[in-house]
Length: 113
Length: 115
Image: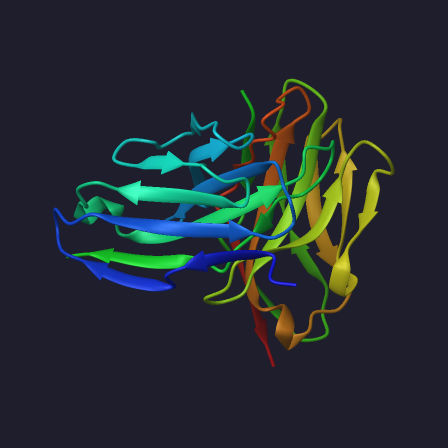
């Protein structure tokens, strides 16, 4: 019963490098989300998806891209990493039914030097 | 526009004493409200949710919260704190009309439990 799995768990990048964070869920959820968590700011929504093949911008989308080619996977890409993107990234998923909570992964800690 | 305000960034209690974490929300429609807990280096775990049924909501680990529409509050309480309750707690709102079910997070309250 894995739930929501994020890989990698930790990563250090140099400014300008690119990378992709992977989120996988095994609960057949329609909705998936990417957040970033910074000290004193709670979680802020980067991008989200309401189903396979669809994506939409959240509160802080600049500098990130996403793809949802398969229902169970939601990828977050950084094309040219910047120090301001140093953060903890969380993925979440939920079913398409009223009043259901989001289920979160354990996070990816990303440092940009 | 919806928003969430957690009134205390840090709360410190002694083990065995009551816990009160305060949350006020702003919502233009019938909201869903949640409390999540985050232990160090972990993801977020759902404590409880309010979805327009009973105004007093019971959650896991002895926590409960009361929805007060007149005060736009959703405070989290526990009668007796345990050392394992030390963590960060987030109050979260989701608008009833928003079919994307986006969540708006408060900035968090860090609970410290003294022995």
